[in-house]
Amino acid sequence: MSDGKALAWTQEYVLFHAEPDGVVTDEWVPAAAVTTIRREDSDWIDAYDLLA
Image (cartoon, rainbow, N blue to C red; front, side):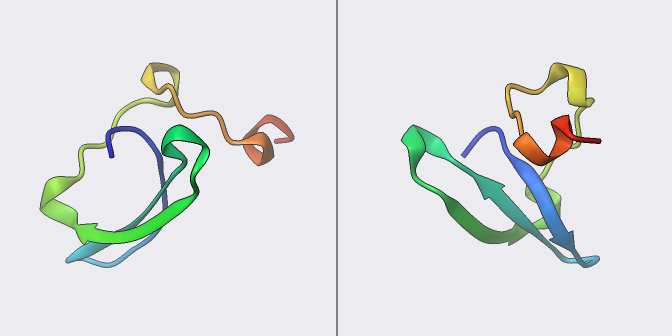
């Protein structure tokens, strides 16, 4: 997975939500494997974010 949204996190893991090819996936990944980017730089669009 390359682009998605962090739903939850601890110091060690991030719950990563993505929809590659229209398939919803939620996966705990090591925090060290996650890079934070600006929302403007992301291809991810969450419909709930548009309501804010």
